Length: 110
Image (cartoon, rainbow, N blue to C red; front, side, top):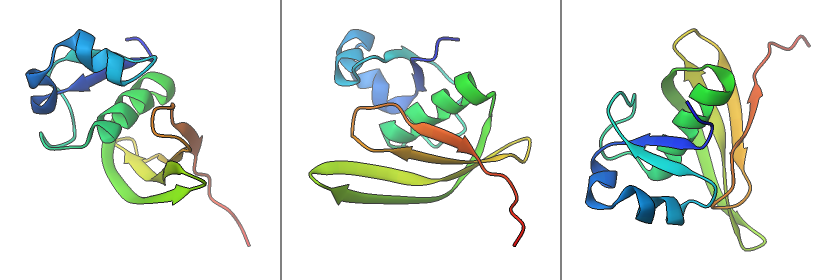
């Protein structure tokens, strides 16, 4: 599977793959099933799920927390996700149409 693929469900059925791809520069959008997210999930969650699957071999179990805010005119997203295999990743996206930065959460000792 290509890093740039986003698998989406009901929200994408209203648009053609070409028109959706234009919305997400650098991403190819493919219709399909198998998403761990609900039908009404925002597109950023679907993009994050696909990026986790392709780059980190992570089947998304849940989004543990997410924070959205404006910083210097940019819409920033950051949070943590859990994979089916119990790994957790921190993610961030500094701009609306950029890829997520994904880092493995490792235990720390104080």
